[in-house]
Image 1 (spheres, rainbow over the protein chains, first blue to last red):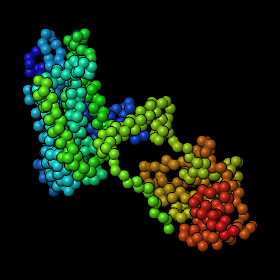
Image 2 (cartoon, rainbow over the protein chains, first blue to last red; image 1 turned 90 degrees about the horizontal axis):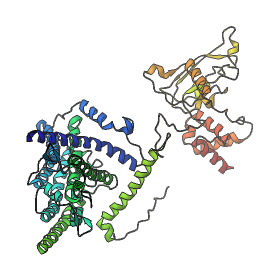
Image 3 (cartoon, one colour; image 1 turned 180 degrees about the vertical axis):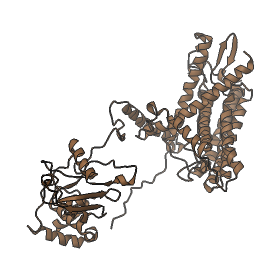
Image 4 (spheres, each protein chain N blue to C red; image 1 turned 135 degrees about the horizontal axis):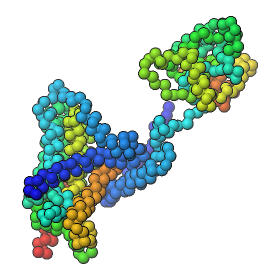
Length: 346
Length: 247
């Protein structure tokens, strides 16, 4: 097979898979929240209401596309695209499995193993904010503008600790490539723990999780859309599939961030203490590594939902305070300790 | 005057663990997890009405009280005779003025179909206006109109919301077939038989407010007050209490 055919197959596969998971997540979110709140949730469409996302999708596609009269038409149209595009393209550098050998050809289960994959994720992650700001500004609505402003303010207060927490990981593994980081997490650490990032960077992991929730605009940091304060924030004026893009982008973001968490901190496709490649065939090993990776990711996806329906929203100034007064100093301390340890051990 | 509720406010410094916040989040996660697992297990239980707080409406229906006030029906007695005599008391009692009754004499040879000497030639209830207060039921001297158990009254056009006599009789047959006919009213002491109604009237006047506004209401309240066991209406209860105080 040509290389480009393989690349195309991988792109199509991970694209479809991410979309499928995002769709499914809307169902998980709704039914999960219902179960936590002693309700039932949507259970009419299909078995267990599983076709509900489909029905929602049809609804969003067939709804009238309304553009407010005083909106800036171009910016208004640009907003959802700017939000969804980075969300969809971030996954390109994150692995979804180890490798598969087909016809003697080794296929890496990752769309592209970029040597600066790490920076790519960070860069595209911050790009998503443009979608909110542009959409919020273009809507010409005070709530939308407030939502956009909040997203920028939130961005600068959490992106710094986010980057610093990840920097410690880079220090440990000495590479920006996410595949190499994944490969380095095989085996055990200190003789008894799995060699996972979370055991080497416990503080870094906590900082990363907290900032990841802010990055994904999820409760408790869902300030840009804070529906109890500013209606729906940046997407107040949006309807039909434009809104659908925003919502979809959010869930794809969740998937990307969960996969990133697993890649960096939870040993990617490695099972603790067990080396799957030793006793599985080349193809079945590929599938197994994909499944292990996905199960870990699924846990973090669920954690997003779980936390959302447990914790109330932070106040605006509390998020800023948390970001600047707690997370950044902690991240710097973490970075310092990590650097010290590496300097002493190497 | 109600006193403002004093909430106990305990002012204290947050402990270190609380200020860290993460431990508290974990506690919260444990709580939601408990709810989640409980409800998931409950939702897999066979049978209707699984999650304890949810009634899945068209399948699970809440039981309704025997004195529920739903769609009206016209009562037939045990011999299948219409009880309504067409007196129009219900139409007068109706605060929404949704009942139209026309009185007439039964046609030759049809006297057996009616319990009284007269009957209603026309009986219309405009369900769009009806407020389901049940005053017609209480005003009826023959117990010929009742508010039945049926509460799904949506229609596709407004004309079908005006119930005529056939519809009202059909409602009766339906309720009878389902065994949901209203239990007979408890006997009410005859007005003027003792001094109670007068005392009640005075109490009602003193109380003023809702009772003084509508005469039929007062009458209804007086009746309900007489039969204490019924006690379906809050006003009736309030008046009974007032009366007891006076005595």
